[in-house]
Length: 165
Image (tube, rainbow, N blue to C red; front, side, top):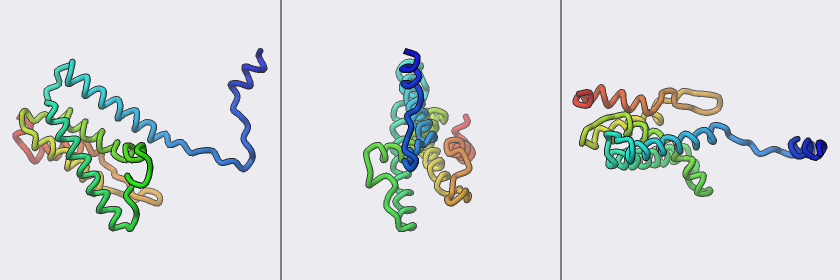
């Protein structure tokens, strides 16, 4: 019994040359966070009485998805590579849009615009744009260095003074 339990819990031995599949822990964390912020927004809208309306969430998501796709299209054309969200599975496409999804929901949830929708769309556009424009070299690639949601919210509050009142 003890031997069976040990063999069931110990990792299986792999052949010497076998490659293990690479598991990106950042992608797993991104998926969990996207689920959590979506659940929080849905729960907040339906039961907690969040102030922003459904239209703010929808407009923010539409702005983020559209701008992310357009910026990827431009970047892919300039770099001469295929689009990052095509040529694979549905999961690959969903994974590509997860950062935009998280950013859109965060901006819509944290930026109070009353009944106005434009300030939320503006904040979301700044957030997604900052991710594409404000990059530094890291290793073999380039990565954004500011939190996109915070950047979009801060710029919207600075440039649209009526937002703070």
